[in-house]
Image 1 (cartoon, rainbow, N blue to C red):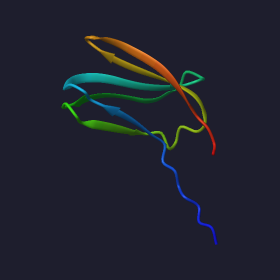
Image 2 (cartoon, rainbow, N blue to C red):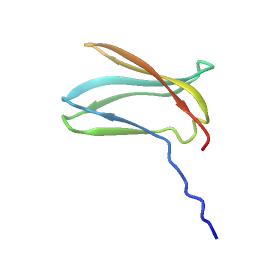
Image 3 (cartoon, rainbow, N blue to C red):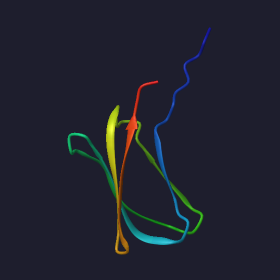
Image 4 (cartoon, rainbow, N blue to C red):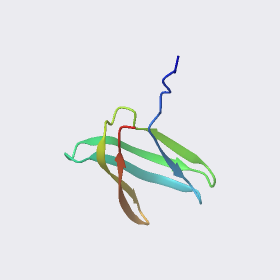
Length: 79
């Protein structure tokens, strides 16, 4: 019998340098905010965000810091 493997949907942020007070926001296509937290990390640290409840579709990522803003998008598909 084949077993189903549960795949977790994780977004990982790796800190190259130490960074305090980074606002991380994940927004879906409808504009609903799925994740909005302020995180800090040491150099080499990784922060993982669970997107298990996000569903499928296109999502937008916004990283805001006093040094600037970075935005991007990604897609979650059914496999």
